[in-house]
Amino acid sequence: MARLSRRGPPCTIVIKLGTSSIVHEDTHQPLLSILSSVVETVVQLRNHGHKVVLVSSGAIGMGLRTMGIAQRPKGLSAKQALAAVGQGRLIALFDNLFGQFDQRIAQVLITRGDISDRTRYLNAVNTFKELLSMGVVPIVNENDTISVSEIKFGDNDTLSAITSSMIHADYLFLLTDVDGLYTSNPRKDPSARKIDVVTSVAAIRTEVSTSTLGSSLGTGGMETKLIAAEVATGAGVTTIIASSKLPTTIIDIIDYYNALKTNSIPSSGAASPIPKLASIDLDQVTSSLSVFRPPHTVFRPSLNPMRDLKAWTSHTLYPAGSVIIDSGAHRVLSRRESGGRLLPAGVLAVRDTFASGQAVRILVRRRAEESSSEEGEMSTPSPAAMSRSPSSSSLVDDIADDDATTTEKADESDTWDVVEVGRGLANYNSAQISRVKGLNSSQIPRLLVYADTEYVVENITIRVPPL
Image (tube, rainbow, N blue to C red; front, top):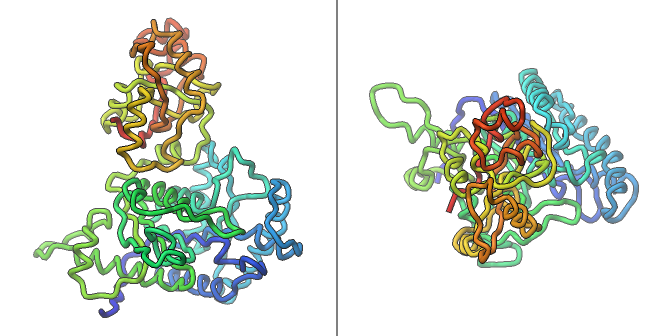
């Protein structure tokens, strides 16, 4: 097959580079050959007119070498101290490499807490936009020096997905030590098969084994990349897993998809717009083109990406509590025309204490056998999409005590579970929602003395459909 170079319109690209691609796992020395190739690739992309953001791990790994420590410590304070030492070395290394090409860079350190406030989130978005418009390459990392478990992204795969969502990127490249998503670890299983195109992250989980962990220095593995792909594609970002050993493949991949888009334009006299990648049958178009396909796995973006506000609510906020709804409310909220707004009549109970304006989990009460059946029929959801409450028995007691004000009666002979199906922003605090749960919204002014809105929770993103 011949290679086809097709320069398309400028786009915004996020490239995530893991610790194992930056420092050697045993010696902790920087992998200068890979880093230099990444820098050269970013500079080429900039020369082609693209805007590029680099999400880079490696602060702790660089700190280990600087301090002469052999292994990554387990204690939080020790890791935070090493991150503080290594982050300066890491950004200095990038500044030196990019400086050889007169390319300016900027350091951006983020925690989930930094963007959990809507104003600060928008400020971060504006900063990214301004840096990119100035021709600067932002280098993003989690601020490990001050992060704690409650506000950590968990890994830079997730951070890169949220960053790509924030800036409405066209592509997210997750560079790793393999050239795509395999059904199992190709280094250990000779029968492992590479998957070229993923349309549904939830569906692909039944075909692949994600039990392998990241390196001894990193925090991620293939599971975290699936979670990142789920977040990014939900925001309309084409997500690609490719090898970090040959970063120039990024340019080939972008050229390849530009060629596919052009080839998919119907032959008609009138000028036709370039189609979006989400609307193209990638397998069919690929088979019809005699061009070289660079090795990679592509996750197709959603045809109906989440709005910015819903993406922010769903992925950047740390939920302060939970609102339990009935199955009828779940069905209504799953429809686009609902606008993601919850009336008090659909609320069964409230869990934990939260204030107005804070993010909350949306939980659905189901009979235990329904939950078990669903788990057997559906693929395993990502931790970002679903969680089972460890104290569901106490929740059932809370619900049963208030049967007179709920819309769904509990049968005492049934066992109930609660399942997280989405997230939203509370319009009232937990005590207020508890007072009006199960009631008509017209009673809100009488019970709460005031009524800002008839909806108790808004901007709800349902990520698990009803049974």
